[in-house]
Image 1 (tube, rainbow, N blue to C red):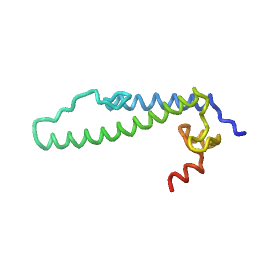
Image 2: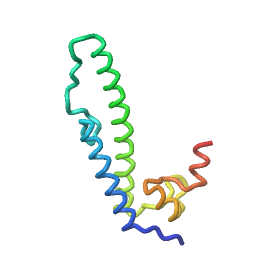
Image 3: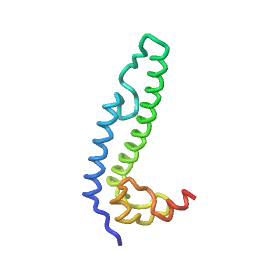
Image 4: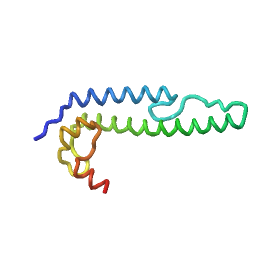
Length: 117
């Protein structure tokens, strides 16, 4: 039986969660990905186009951050319900090395490989 360091995982997941929330806040977004600030489009068309492009880029980054945050929250939920470290597909242990490398892993290497193929 492979033993996953739950305390270490929780510490890493909470640190990652704090980092993601901080990054979202710096971009003017909530944890759910909603933007909290208004975009100033400026006076000219070129300024409006640049502002729109920048807003699109920010929205893409916010979307990625919220997905990562959801993965972290899901991993923390799995710790709470006692299923952390178990593959979502086959139910077998994912493995300590993989969980240490990527604490939000949901699949063992074999199942992840099959899903990616």
